[in-house]
Amino acid sequence: MPPFERIVAEYGPLISRIAMSYEADPTLREDLTQQIFLAVWQALPSFRADSSLKTFIARVAQNRSISFVTKQVRQPRLAELPERLEADTLNPEEEAIELNEREMLLAATRRLPLPQREVIILVLEGFSYPEIAEMLDIAPNALALRLSRAKSALKSMLEHK
Amino acid sequence: MSDFDLDRLGDVWRQQPDPAEMERLQRTAIAVARRARLAAIVDVCAAVAVAAVVIVLVITNPNMQTLVMGSAAILVLLGSNIRLRRLRQVELMGLTGTTEDMLDQSIARVETTLRHHKFTLFAAPFVLIGSWLGFATAAAPRPESIFGMLREIPGFRPILFATAMAALVALAIFLIVSIRRGRRELNRLNAMREAYRQERDSSAP
Image (cartoon, one colour):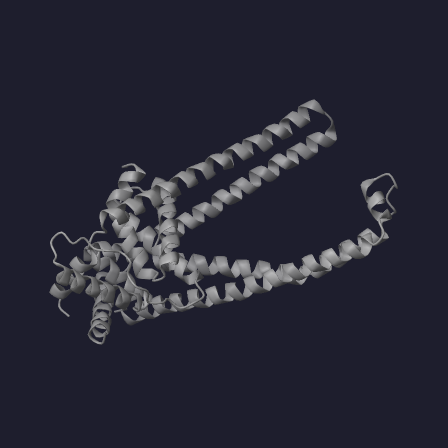
């Protein structure tokens, strides 16, 4: 098992993106990110390597995020995205387009129903379909159907933005 | 939307945070881990300290009363540690299991908390009245004892009564607010659970 610091270096961005896709408010998101780090730290000793470490961390992060949002009494609000993106390969115009696209994608993702949001986040994070089916404990055909619904909902939201 | 589009959106989604943001994430994670390690050490030290004090008291005053009280204190300490450990295990199972299992556990937890709060709200006035009656009908304390001296202070009883009432009102407000918050959380959890159930039912063969 790599030390916690190395895990954060490798999977910190994944944790940050999952927190962003569940919580729009920057202050609450910071709180959620801390809670996810704590949950990962507490859960790591129970990691048995029957799945990849990335899968394990994504599962813990999603579950902590869902339990966090259920405690919030207000509806999620669509906040601005404070994080800057790396601009090594992009000119300012391209960067602005991409930043805007990412903001819109995040905002649309946050509006998806929870079961569909969960699937879309895992697909966007690059998990394979068998990995996602295993994480969610659903059959591959059920996953395909859920993903299809999630994609059309996301497409509709992005088109009507 | 084709899979190709989703692949491209994935590339947009997975943009790495800039070095400053990464640095901030690292700092946050390390601080959280440090606090958690410290809390674990404090838990163990506190348990060891309490147990040591109890053992020293029993050894220095070897009679039946201190032995019984010391054993009871250690049993309570052990019991609370075991309960805490079980709660953490349940929480860990929720974190590492499926979302639906986690939602079921959360619903059970919130329902139990709501039941406890409602029971406390109902029972607290009776406990207070009972304590007050017991206090009022008990034999008068010796004048040299602390209670005896307190009773001699003019207006002590009305002040004590007012303080107890204020504490009761504060407890009631706290419980009512907690119950309302718990109900809202339960509604949201049930709505989420229902969303998963519908999703499962609609994709069943």
